[in-house]
Length: 242
Length: 261
Image 1 (cartoon, rainbow over the protein chains, first blue to last red):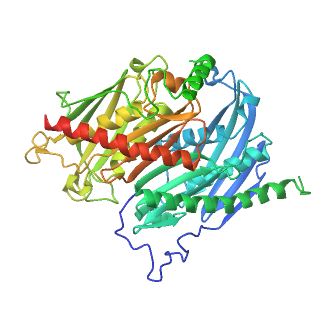
Image 2 (image 1 turned 135 degrees about the horizontal axis):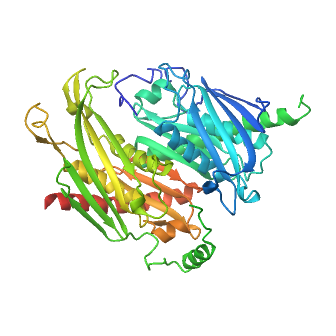
Image 3 (image 1 turned 90 degrees about the vertical axis):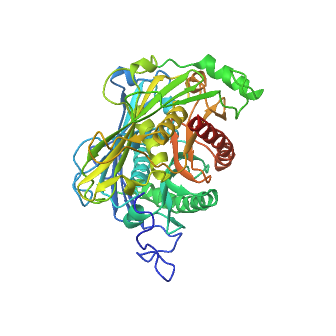
Protein backbone atom coordinates (compact mmCIF):
# COMPACT_ATOMS: atom_id res chain seq x y z
CA UNK A 1 0.00 0.00 0.00
CA UNK A 2 1.33 3.34 -0.96
CA UNK A 3 0.55 6.84 0.08
CA UNK A 4 -1.59 6.32 3.20
CA UNK A 5 -4.45 8.67 2.57
CA UNK A 6 -2.59 11.70 1.20
CA UNK A 7 -4.76 11.58 -1.94
CA UNK A 8 -8.51 12.16 -1.87
CA UNK A 9 -10.29 8.95 -2.86
CA UNK A 10 -13.84 9.56 -1.66
CA UNK A 11 -16.05 12.32 -3.03
CA UNK A 12 -18.06 14.68 -0.88
CA UNK A 13 -21.24 12.79 -1.77
CA UNK A 14 -19.74 9.63 -0.22
CA UNK A 15 -19.18 7.89 -3.55
CA UNK A 16 -15.80 6.86 -4.92
CA UNK A 17 -13.86 8.74 -7.58
CA UNK A 18 -15.27 6.55 -10.35
CA UNK A 19 -18.80 6.98 -9.00
CA UNK A 20 -19.09 3.56 -7.36
CA UNK A 21 -20.73 2.98 -3.99
CA UNK A 22 -18.53 1.62 -1.18
CA UNK A 23 -19.76 -1.94 -1.68
CA UNK A 24 -19.99 -1.86 -5.46
CA UNK A 25 -17.58 -3.77 -7.63
CA UNK A 26 -16.35 -2.97 -11.11
CA UNK A 27 -18.16 -4.74 -13.96
CA UNK A 28 -16.97 -8.28 -14.67
CA UNK A 29 -17.28 -10.16 -17.94
CA UNK A 30 -16.07 -13.69 -18.57
CA UNK A 31 -15.71 -15.76 -21.70
CA UNK A 32 -14.73 -19.44 -21.61
CA UNK A 33 -12.93 -21.40 -24.31
CA UNK A 34 -11.24 -18.52 -26.10
CA UNK A 35 -7.88 -20.18 -26.91
CA UNK A 36 -8.10 -22.93 -29.53
CA UNK A 37 -4.74 -24.51 -28.67
CA UNK A 38 -5.51 -24.96 -24.98
CA UNK A 39 -7.48 -27.77 -23.36
CA UNK A 40 -9.41 -25.13 -21.44
CA UNK A 41 -9.23 -21.36 -21.35
CA UNK A 42 -10.96 -18.21 -20.21
CA UNK A 43 -10.74 -14.46 -20.41
CA UNK A 44 -11.85 -12.31 -17.51
CA UNK A 45 -12.30 -8.57 -17.70
CA UNK A 46 -12.69 -6.99 -14.31
CA UNK A 47 -12.98 -3.25 -14.65
CA UNK A 48 -10.08 -2.43 -16.93
CA UNK A 49 -8.13 -5.57 -15.96
CA UNK A 50 -7.84 -8.23 -18.62
CA UNK A 51 -6.67 -11.69 -17.56
CA UNK A 52 -6.38 -14.71 -19.81
CA UNK A 53 -5.88 -18.25 -18.51
CA UNK A 54 -5.00 -21.41 -20.39
CA UNK A 55 -4.98 -24.99 -19.09
CA UNK A 56 -2.81 -27.74 -20.55
CA UNK A 57 -2.80 -31.35 -19.40
CA UNK A 58 -3.10 -33.40 -17.29
CA UNK A 59 0.29 -34.52 -18.60
CA UNK A 60 3.27 -36.35 -17.24
CA UNK A 61 4.90 -34.32 -14.50
CA UNK A 62 8.45 -33.39 -15.21
CA UNK A 63 11.04 -32.59 -14.00
CA UNK A 64 10.49 -35.72 -11.97
CA UNK A 65 11.26 -34.04 -8.69
CA UNK A 66 7.97 -32.13 -8.85
CA UNK A 67 6.02 -35.41 -9.22
CA UNK A 68 3.70 -36.47 -6.43
CA UNK A 69 2.95 -40.17 -6.16
CA UNK A 70 -0.56 -39.64 -4.79
CA UNK A 71 -1.84 -36.70 -6.80
CA UNK A 72 -1.36 -34.22 -9.61
CA UNK A 73 0.53 -31.00 -9.11
CA UNK A 74 -0.76 -27.76 -10.56
CA UNK A 75 1.93 -25.69 -12.17
CA UNK A 76 0.87 -22.06 -12.36
CA UNK A 77 2.61 -19.24 -14.11
CA UNK A 78 1.16 -15.79 -13.48
CA UNK A 79 2.75 -13.31 -15.86
CA UNK A 80 2.16 -9.66 -16.55
CA UNK A 81 2.66 -8.70 -20.18
CA UNK A 82 5.28 -5.96 -20.70
CA UNK A 83 2.58 -3.63 -22.05
CA UNK A 84 0.06 -4.32 -19.28
CA UNK A 85 0.97 -1.31 -17.12
CA UNK A 86 1.71 2.35 -17.77
CA UNK A 87 5.46 1.79 -17.30
CA UNK A 88 6.69 -1.17 -19.32
CA UNK A 89 7.42 -4.26 -17.22
CA UNK A 90 10.66 -6.08 -17.91
CA UNK A 91 9.66 -9.49 -19.31
CA UNK A 92 10.20 -12.55 -17.19
CA UNK A 93 9.49 -13.87 -13.75
CA UNK A 94 10.10 -11.59 -10.79
CA UNK A 95 9.69 -12.14 -7.05
CA UNK A 96 6.14 -10.82 -7.04
CA UNK A 97 4.98 -13.05 -9.89
CA UNK A 98 6.69 -16.09 -8.39
CA UNK A 99 4.91 -15.61 -5.08
CA UNK A 100 1.53 -15.01 -6.72
CA UNK A 101 2.01 -18.10 -8.92
CA UNK A 102 2.76 -20.20 -5.86
CA UNK A 103 -0.27 -19.15 -3.82
CA UNK A 104 -2.64 -19.35 -6.80
CA UNK A 105 -1.36 -22.88 -7.51
CA UNK A 106 -2.00 -23.88 -3.91
CA UNK A 107 -5.50 -22.39 -4.02
CA UNK A 108 -6.33 -24.31 -7.21
CA UNK A 109 -4.91 -27.54 -5.76
CA UNK A 110 -7.42 -27.03 -2.94
CA UNK A 111 -10.40 -27.41 -5.29
CA UNK A 112 -9.21 -29.60 -8.16
CA UNK A 113 -9.62 -33.32 -7.45
CA UNK A 114 -5.89 -33.80 -7.89
CA UNK A 115 -6.01 -37.36 -6.48
CA UNK A 116 -7.55 -38.43 -9.79
CA UNK A 117 -4.26 -37.84 -11.60
CA UNK A 118 -1.30 -39.22 -9.65
CA UNK A 119 2.20 -38.34 -10.94
CA UNK A 120 0.82 -35.85 -13.42
CA UNK A 121 0.89 -32.14 -13.90
CA UNK A 122 -1.76 -29.66 -14.89
CA UNK A 123 -0.35 -26.49 -16.37
CA UNK A 124 -2.21 -23.26 -15.77
CA UNK A 125 -0.88 -20.21 -17.57
CA UNK A 126 -2.21 -16.82 -16.50
CA UNK A 127 -1.38 -13.82 -18.67
CA UNK A 128 -2.33 -10.33 -17.56
CA UNK A 129 -2.87 -8.18 -20.63
CA UNK A 130 -4.08 -5.06 -18.84
CA UNK A 131 -3.41 -4.35 -15.17
CA UNK A 132 -5.48 -1.83 -13.20
CA UNK A 133 -5.36 -3.27 -9.65
CA UNK A 134 -6.75 -6.67 -8.81
CA UNK A 135 -4.90 -8.76 -11.37
CA UNK A 136 -4.28 -11.72 -9.06
CA UNK A 137 -8.02 -11.97 -8.38
CA UNK A 138 -8.95 -11.67 -12.06
CA UNK A 139 -6.25 -14.25 -12.83
CA UNK A 140 -7.54 -16.65 -10.19
CA UNK A 141 -11.10 -16.35 -11.47
CA UNK A 142 -9.90 -16.91 -15.04
CA UNK A 143 -7.89 -19.96 -13.97
CA UNK A 144 -10.91 -21.51 -12.25
CA UNK A 145 -13.10 -21.04 -15.33
CA UNK A 146 -10.34 -22.37 -17.61
CA UNK A 147 -9.98 -25.51 -15.44
CA UNK A 148 -13.72 -26.08 -15.57
CA UNK A 149 -13.66 -25.47 -19.32
CA UNK A 150 -10.93 -28.11 -19.61
CA UNK A 151 -13.24 -30.60 -17.93
CA UNK A 152 -10.92 -31.09 -14.96
CA UNK A 153 -13.00 -32.34 -12.02
CA UNK A 154 -13.27 -29.83 -9.18
CA UNK A 155 -15.01 -29.65 -5.79
CA UNK A 156 -16.10 -26.10 -6.50
CA UNK A 157 -15.09 -23.05 -8.49
CA UNK A 158 -12.90 -20.34 -6.94
CA UNK A 159 -13.79 -16.69 -7.20
CA UNK A 160 -11.01 -14.13 -6.83
CA UNK A 161 -12.18 -10.90 -5.22
CA UNK A 162 -10.69 -8.15 -3.07
CA UNK A 163 -11.77 -5.49 -0.62
CA UNK A 164 -9.65 -2.83 0.97
CA UNK A 165 -9.56 0.44 2.83
CA UNK A 166 -9.34 4.01 1.57
CA UNK A 167 -9.61 7.13 3.71
CA UNK A 168 -10.34 4.93 6.75
CA UNK A 169 -13.34 3.44 4.94
CA UNK A 170 -13.73 -0.18 3.86
CA UNK A 171 -14.50 -0.48 0.14
CA UNK A 172 -15.07 -3.37 -2.22
CA UNK A 173 -12.77 -4.00 -5.20
CA UNK A 174 -10.01 -1.36 -5.23
CA UNK A 175 -9.25 0.34 -8.52
CA UNK A 176 -5.79 1.58 -9.50
CA UNK A 177 -5.88 4.87 -7.58
CA UNK A 178 -7.40 3.21 -4.52
CA UNK A 179 -4.76 0.49 -4.62
CA UNK A 180 -1.91 2.98 -4.99
CA UNK A 181 -3.05 5.45 -2.37
CA UNK A 182 -5.28 3.32 -0.14
CA UNK A 183 -4.55 1.84 3.27
CA UNK A 184 -5.23 -1.88 2.89
CA UNK A 185 -5.95 -4.60 0.37
CA UNK A 186 -7.50 -8.00 1.16
CA UNK A 187 -7.57 -10.32 -1.86
CA UNK A 188 -9.25 -13.68 -1.29
CA UNK A 189 -10.31 -16.75 -3.25
CA UNK A 190 -13.77 -17.94 -2.20
CA UNK A 191 -15.43 -21.28 -2.92
CA UNK A 192 -18.90 -20.02 -3.81
CA UNK A 193 -20.83 -23.18 -2.95
CA UNK A 194 -19.18 -24.14 0.34
CA UNK A 195 -18.32 -20.63 1.56
CA UNK A 196 -14.75 -21.73 2.28
CA UNK A 197 -11.62 -19.70 1.55
CA UNK A 198 -8.77 -21.14 -0.52
CA UNK A 199 -6.74 -18.00 -1.19
CA UNK A 200 -5.91 -15.30 1.33
CA UNK A 201 -3.48 -12.44 1.30
CA UNK A 202 -3.60 -9.02 2.88
CA UNK A 203 -1.40 -6.02 3.33
CA UNK A 204 -1.86 -2.61 4.84
CA UNK A 205 -3.72 -1.78 8.02
CA UNK A 206 -7.09 -3.23 9.07
CA UNK A 207 -8.70 -3.39 12.49
CA UNK A 208 -10.59 -6.61 13.34
CA UNK A 209 -13.94 -4.87 12.64
CA UNK A 210 -12.70 -3.52 9.31
CA UNK A 211 -11.49 -7.01 8.40
CA UNK A 212 -14.92 -8.49 9.11
CA UNK A 213 -16.67 -5.88 6.96
CA UNK A 214 -14.15 -6.36 4.14
CA UNK A 215 -14.79 -10.11 4.21
CA UNK A 216 -18.55 -9.50 4.15
CA UNK A 217 -18.11 -7.39 1.00
CA UNK A 218 -15.88 -10.08 -0.50
CA UNK A 219 -18.46 -12.82 0.03
CA UNK A 220 -21.21 -10.67 -1.47
CA UNK A 221 -19.11 -9.90 -4.55
CA UNK A 222 -18.04 -13.53 -4.90
CA UNK A 223 -21.68 -14.58 -5.24
CA UNK A 224 -22.16 -12.02 -8.03
CA UNK A 225 -19.01 -13.04 -9.91
CA UNK A 226 -19.91 -16.71 -9.49
CA UNK A 227 -23.08 -16.14 -11.51
CA UNK A 228 -21.01 -14.61 -14.32
CA UNK A 229 -18.63 -17.59 -14.23
CA UNK A 230 -21.44 -20.14 -14.42
CA UNK A 231 -23.09 -18.16 -17.20
CA UNK A 232 -19.82 -18.16 -19.21
CA UNK A 233 -19.48 -21.93 -18.86
CA UNK A 234 -23.12 -22.48 -19.81
CA UNK A 235 -22.78 -20.30 -22.89
CA UNK A 236 -19.74 -22.33 -23.90
CA UNK A 237 -21.49 -25.68 -23.70
CA UNK A 238 -25.19 -24.97 -24.28
CA UNK A 239 -25.71 -25.36 -28.01
CA UNK A 240 -22.92 -22.96 -28.94
CA UNK A 241 -20.62 -23.37 -31.90
CA UNK A 242 -18.46 -25.70 -29.79
CA UNK B 1 13.66 -34.63 -3.75
CA UNK B 2 10.53 -36.73 -4.14
CA UNK B 3 8.43 -36.17 -1.06
CA UNK B 4 7.15 -39.42 0.40
CA UNK B 5 3.54 -39.44 1.48
CA UNK B 6 3.58 -39.52 5.28
CA UNK B 7 0.42 -41.59 5.58
CA UNK B 8 1.23 -43.10 8.96
CA UNK B 9 2.20 -39.70 10.31
CA UNK B 10 -1.06 -38.19 9.11
CA UNK B 11 -3.04 -40.96 10.80
CA UNK B 12 -1.15 -40.44 14.03
CA UNK B 13 -1.70 -36.67 13.90
CA UNK B 14 -5.43 -37.17 13.28
CA UNK B 15 -5.62 -39.55 16.25
CA UNK B 16 -3.82 -37.04 18.48
CA UNK B 17 -6.08 -34.22 17.33
CA UNK B 18 -9.12 -36.26 18.39
CA UNK B 19 -7.79 -36.50 21.92
CA UNK B 20 -6.77 -32.83 21.81
CA UNK B 21 -3.03 -33.34 22.18
CA UNK B 22 0.03 -32.94 19.99
CA UNK B 23 3.11 -35.03 19.22
CA UNK B 24 5.23 -33.06 21.66
CA UNK B 25 2.45 -32.85 24.24
CA UNK B 26 1.58 -29.21 23.63
CA UNK B 27 -1.95 -27.85 23.69
CA UNK B 28 -3.57 -26.68 20.44
CA UNK B 29 -2.68 -23.03 20.94
CA UNK B 30 0.62 -23.44 22.82
CA UNK B 31 3.89 -22.28 21.29
CA UNK B 32 7.31 -23.77 21.84
CA UNK B 33 9.78 -21.98 24.03
CA UNK B 34 11.28 -19.04 22.19
CA UNK B 35 14.68 -17.55 22.80
CA UNK B 36 15.69 -14.27 21.28
CA UNK B 37 19.15 -12.75 21.24
CA UNK B 38 19.89 -9.34 19.74
CA UNK B 39 23.13 -7.67 18.59
CA UNK B 40 24.77 -11.03 18.02
CA UNK B 41 26.44 -10.43 14.62
CA UNK B 42 29.45 -8.10 14.76
CA UNK B 43 29.43 -6.87 11.16
CA UNK B 44 25.68 -6.37 10.87
CA UNK B 45 24.23 -2.97 11.77
CA UNK B 46 21.41 -4.73 13.59
CA UNK B 47 20.98 -8.43 14.26
CA UNK B 48 18.99 -11.08 16.02
CA UNK B 49 18.97 -14.82 16.54
CA UNK B 50 15.77 -16.71 17.24
CA UNK B 51 15.55 -20.26 18.52
CA UNK B 52 12.07 -21.84 18.49
CA UNK B 53 12.24 -25.51 19.31
CA UNK B 54 14.46 -27.04 16.61
CA UNK B 55 14.22 -23.95 14.43
CA UNK B 56 17.15 -21.52 14.34
CA UNK B 57 17.25 -18.36 12.28
CA UNK B 58 19.46 -15.28 12.13
CA UNK B 59 18.56 -11.88 10.75
CA UNK B 60 21.06 -9.16 9.90
CA UNK B 61 20.40 -5.56 8.86
CA UNK B 62 22.68 -3.73 6.43
CA UNK B 63 22.41 -0.21 5.02
CA UNK B 64 23.43 1.22 1.68
CA UNK B 65 23.27 4.65 0.10
CA UNK B 66 21.22 4.72 -3.05
CA UNK B 67 19.27 7.04 -5.29
CA UNK B 68 15.56 7.12 -4.42
CA UNK B 69 12.82 5.70 -6.64
CA UNK B 70 11.69 8.42 -9.06
CA UNK B 71 8.13 8.37 -7.70
CA UNK B 72 9.27 8.59 -4.05
CA UNK B 73 12.15 11.11 -4.15
CA UNK B 74 12.09 11.81 -0.40
CA UNK B 75 11.80 8.24 0.83
CA UNK B 76 14.34 5.58 1.64
CA UNK B 77 13.67 1.94 0.95
CA UNK B 78 13.24 -1.26 2.89
CA UNK B 79 13.86 -4.74 1.60
CA UNK B 80 13.51 -7.98 3.42
CA UNK B 81 14.51 -11.31 1.96
CA UNK B 82 14.99 -14.81 3.26
CA UNK B 83 17.30 -17.58 2.21
CA UNK B 84 16.51 -21.24 2.62
CA UNK B 85 19.95 -22.73 2.16
CA UNK B 86 20.68 -26.47 2.04
CA UNK B 87 22.19 -26.09 5.51
CA UNK B 88 18.72 -25.73 7.01
CA UNK B 89 17.08 -29.03 6.05
CA UNK B 90 17.47 -32.02 3.79
CA UNK B 91 14.53 -30.79 1.73
CA UNK B 92 16.38 -27.64 0.60
CA UNK B 93 18.64 -27.75 -2.42
CA UNK B 94 21.20 -25.33 -3.79
CA UNK B 95 20.17 -23.09 -6.63
CA UNK B 96 18.34 -19.85 -7.34
CA UNK B 97 15.78 -18.62 -4.79
CA UNK B 98 12.89 -21.08 -4.54
CA UNK B 99 9.22 -20.02 -4.48
CA UNK B 100 9.21 -21.01 -0.79
CA UNK B 101 12.00 -18.62 0.12
CA UNK B 102 10.50 -15.82 -1.97
CA UNK B 103 7.13 -16.25 -0.26
CA UNK B 104 8.76 -16.29 3.17
CA UNK B 105 10.77 -13.12 2.53
CA UNK B 106 7.84 -11.27 1.05
CA UNK B 107 5.39 -12.19 3.82
CA UNK B 108 7.84 -10.99 6.49
CA UNK B 109 8.57 -7.89 4.39
CA UNK B 110 4.89 -6.96 4.10
CA UNK B 111 4.27 -7.32 7.82
CA UNK B 112 7.11 -4.93 8.64
CA UNK B 113 6.52 -2.50 5.77
CA UNK B 114 2.76 -2.24 6.15
CA UNK B 115 2.87 -1.74 9.90
CA UNK B 116 4.52 1.60 9.15
CA UNK B 117 7.10 0.96 11.86
CA UNK B 118 9.79 2.61 9.72
CA UNK B 119 9.23 6.20 8.66
CA UNK B 120 10.55 6.01 5.11
CA UNK B 121 11.02 9.78 4.97
CA UNK B 122 13.42 9.62 7.91
CA UNK B 123 15.69 7.58 5.61
CA UNK B 124 16.08 10.48 3.17
CA UNK B 125 19.42 12.31 3.15
CA UNK B 126 19.16 14.50 0.03
CA UNK B 127 15.72 14.40 -1.66
CA UNK B 128 15.92 13.04 -5.17
CA UNK B 129 19.58 12.15 -4.77
CA UNK B 130 20.56 10.16 -1.74
CA UNK B 131 18.56 7.96 0.60
CA UNK B 132 19.22 4.98 2.85
CA UNK B 133 18.29 1.53 1.65
CA UNK B 134 17.65 -0.78 4.58
CA UNK B 135 18.19 -4.45 3.88
CA UNK B 136 17.04 -7.17 6.23
CA UNK B 137 18.47 -10.54 5.31
CA UNK B 138 17.13 -13.60 7.05
CA UNK B 139 19.19 -16.76 7.12
CA UNK B 140 17.49 -19.97 8.18
CA UNK B 141 20.04 -22.34 9.68
CA UNK B 142 17.72 -25.05 10.94
CA UNK B 143 14.12 -25.66 9.83
CA UNK B 144 12.45 -27.39 12.73
CA UNK B 145 9.00 -26.06 11.80
CA UNK B 146 7.30 -22.66 11.73
CA UNK B 147 10.19 -20.76 10.19
CA UNK B 148 7.76 -17.94 9.27
CA UNK B 149 7.24 -16.83 12.86
CA UNK B 150 10.92 -17.27 13.69
CA UNK B 151 11.93 -15.17 10.67
CA UNK B 152 9.36 -12.48 11.39
CA UNK B 153 10.55 -12.21 14.98
CA UNK B 154 14.24 -12.16 14.05
CA UNK B 155 13.64 -9.51 11.38
CA UNK B 156 11.80 -7.03 13.59
CA UNK B 157 14.16 -7.61 16.53
CA UNK B 158 17.19 -7.02 14.29
CA UNK B 159 15.62 -3.91 12.80
CA UNK B 160 14.83 -2.48 16.22
CA UNK B 161 18.47 -2.74 17.28
CA UNK B 162 19.94 -1.30 14.07
CA UNK B 163 22.42 1.57 14.10
CA UNK B 164 22.53 3.68 10.91
CA UNK B 165 26.24 3.69 9.90
CA UNK B 166 26.31 7.31 8.77
CA UNK B 167 29.96 7.88 9.72
CA UNK B 168 31.21 5.06 7.53
CA UNK B 169 29.37 6.55 4.56
CA UNK B 170 30.46 10.10 5.36
CA UNK B 171 26.97 11.51 5.86
CA UNK B 172 26.98 12.54 9.52
CA UNK B 173 27.06 10.75 12.84
CA UNK B 174 25.82 7.24 13.53
CA UNK B 175 22.38 7.07 15.08
CA UNK B 176 19.88 4.47 16.18
CA UNK B 177 17.27 3.66 13.53
CA UNK B 178 13.86 4.85 14.68
CA UNK B 179 11.36 1.98 14.72
CA UNK B 180 7.82 2.53 15.95
CA UNK B 181 6.20 -0.58 17.38
CA UNK B 182 6.84 -4.21 16.65
CA UNK B 183 4.73 -6.09 14.09
CA UNK B 184 4.64 -9.76 15.09
CA UNK B 185 3.61 -12.81 13.09
CA UNK B 186 1.56 -15.76 14.34
CA UNK B 187 1.30 -18.88 12.16
CA UNK B 188 -1.18 -21.72 12.19
CA UNK B 189 -1.18 -25.01 10.31
CA UNK B 190 -4.02 -27.48 9.88
CA UNK B 191 -2.87 -30.68 11.54
CA UNK B 192 -5.12 -33.70 11.90
CA UNK B 193 -8.03 -31.63 10.64
CA UNK B 194 -7.73 -28.73 13.10
CA UNK B 195 -5.51 -25.68 13.32
CA UNK B 196 -2.58 -25.57 15.72
CA UNK B 197 -0.35 -22.65 16.60
CA UNK B 198 3.42 -22.84 15.99
CA UNK B 199 3.61 -26.16 14.07
CA UNK B 200 6.66 -28.37 14.53
CA UNK B 201 8.58 -29.98 11.67
CA UNK B 202 6.58 -33.21 11.94
CA UNK B 203 3.28 -31.33 12.10
CA UNK B 204 4.16 -29.44 8.94
CA UNK B 205 5.18 -32.65 7.17
CA UNK B 206 1.90 -34.37 8.05
CA UNK B 207 -0.26 -31.23 7.97
CA UNK B 208 -2.12 -29.19 5.41
CA UNK B 209 -2.53 -25.49 4.69
CA UNK B 210 -1.07 -22.74 6.85
CA UNK B 211 -2.18 -19.21 7.69
CA UNK B 212 0.16 -16.39 8.70
CA UNK B 213 -1.20 -13.37 10.54
CA UNK B 214 0.92 -10.30 11.28
CA UNK B 215 -0.44 -7.94 13.93
CA UNK B 216 0.77 -4.50 14.97
CA UNK B 217 0.90 -3.09 18.49
CA UNK B 218 -2.75 -1.97 18.28
CA UNK B 219 -3.96 -5.42 17.22
CA UNK B 220 -4.48 -4.30 13.61
CA UNK B 221 -3.79 -6.67 10.73
CA UNK B 222 -0.83 -5.76 8.55
CA UNK B 223 -0.30 -8.93 6.58
CA UNK B 224 -2.18 -12.13 5.89
CA UNK B 225 -1.10 -15.08 3.84
CA UNK B 226 -2.53 -18.51 3.22
CA UNK B 227 -0.03 -21.07 2.01
CA UNK B 228 -0.23 -24.65 0.72
CA UNK B 229 -3.19 -26.75 -0.32
CA UNK B 230 -6.38 -26.51 1.72
CA UNK B 231 -9.36 -24.34 2.58
CA UNK B 232 -10.73 -22.82 5.76
CA UNK B 233 -14.05 -21.41 6.95
CA UNK B 234 -14.61 -17.87 8.25
CA UNK B 235 -15.39 -19.36 11.69
CA UNK B 236 -12.04 -21.15 11.78
CA UNK B 237 -10.30 -17.92 10.87
CA UNK B 238 -12.11 -16.02 13.62
CA UNK B 239 -10.85 -18.52 16.18
CA UNK B 240 -7.18 -18.37 15.18
CA UNK B 241 -7.39 -14.60 14.80
CA UNK B 242 -8.29 -14.45 18.50
CA UNK B 243 -5.38 -16.70 19.44
CA UNK B 244 -3.01 -14.65 17.28
CA UNK B 245 -3.74 -11.54 19.36
CA UNK B 246 -2.62 -13.33 22.54
CA UNK B 247 0.50 -14.98 21.10
CA UNK B 248 1.67 -11.82 19.31
CA UNK B 249 1.34 -9.78 22.50
CA UNK B 250 3.53 -12.31 24.34
CA UNK B 251 6.24 -12.24 21.68
CA UNK B 252 6.14 -8.45 21.59
CA UNK B 253 6.92 -8.46 25.31
CA UNK B 254 9.88 -10.74 24.64
CA UNK B 255 11.24 -8.28 22.07
CA UNK B 256 10.95 -5.41 24.57
CA UNK B 257 12.58 -7.49 27.28
CA UNK B 258 15.61 -8.33 25.13
CA UNK B 259 16.09 -4.72 24.18
CA UNK B 260 16.14 -3.78 27.85
CA UNK B 261 19.17 -6.01 28.46
